[in-house]
Length: 426
Length: 172
Ligand code: SF4
Image (tube, rainbow over all chains, first blue to last red; front, top):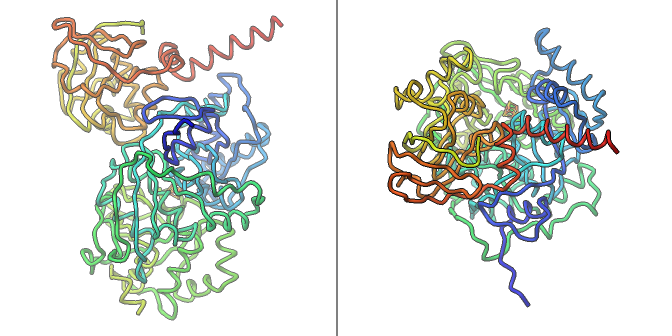
């Protein structure tokens, strides 16, 4: 019998989509796209004129998901126009998988059962690697490439090398996936992923909820990787079953890397990890929270695809329970999706947050990239559970954004300045 | 772009970023204006003296930074025939090919002499130093991508394909 060369998870996913038995890193292949996701900002308003120029139709309207999240709810006539254009285009193009103002695309996509292990998915947004948490090969593309996918159902890619980020040990109390990814950003830098495939593995990852895994895959973008994969397991299955995916469509046995497949491995220890904070203006500018202790914050923001899922809100609630937001600051919370809000309302999380004095905002990108409510004034300082703290991203050019886990953001809201959240949890 | 062309080498270091290629300060203006400032932070002569067909040879992680397509468009505007580097930032690399700029991954790029005159054989993924005769092997691009680049990028390539498809359908 011929010995099969071992393949990584990324190679297996790409090979399947390319219709090949084997693919090798560096090889350029054409892959069939199982699903294309667009949002209101980079989607219809950008691709519609291109499709018109080509006089082309969608290759398969059933494989297209459109989610309005960036300009929701509209704050002016211009954003209202973009949302209106999106609704009209979706109708005309025959796209039925349309989620209008239901939450942030990277959270809504799996929540509504569109993902399952093994799929090859492109998204019109840089945080599309989030889908990698479900064992999908998912990555972000620009509008020109999205137009190509919409017309042909295909996309070319260079088969990536695999960078294995291996975590062992149990996270301590008050330490979360966000701290893990900030630690990885600090160690590897924002180009550490070299546009290859990152795969997260080890017993720490196996012990994380789907939402926590999504935080890691989401910020594979900050590591400069094309995608951020996690091999599917029982945790993946349980999440997808709850999202309404039929059991028969959830394959958690096939989509794993082979032993002996060639990877570049980096090891991390979860048990010794302390809460991390990224100082302005880069996620790679991360260090233990203690380094920034005492920095006063004008605003604390819990929001974005990265940091406002149900477990993120629960983390914040565990810090805020029985406490109040400090008088020198404000705490804004924008749950990642409408379903997240409903869940938080049902289990009492929401009441804890509002009793502490948090201001509840609508579900969408909001202030994360300066689109909606909650942006910063000149010289203001914010601590946020978002993914990026580039200069001016959340508002005025001179504003400063620190990044931290929902624990750390909530703790700063209570103290009025950056503190180690573990001080408030004991 | 022809199957083989010749151009002078402009050599740059590692991590040339999209702000150096397309400076944010001039992004609001027209492309022709932006192109005048391409790479000026590291080589002020470049935009003035570059000739159509010339070859930009970069170091590791060429094109790092933002996803702005202008970083590729300025090089096209200036007539650059190819960009060669040991590695590219992923989004820049995709943008380059999709906008019709030949980008070649060449492990030995650092050995290419500054000011050398190279011939570029895209189909065979090979560069040749016309003075010394030394050859450099690059990672090969499949025929369909070479065709896309020759057509001027993804959209013109699609336009052409759709036209052919439609005229076939009309004849049938
Ligand atoms: S929440 Fe922020 S990071 Fe996430 S998709 Fe929206 S703008 Fe991007």
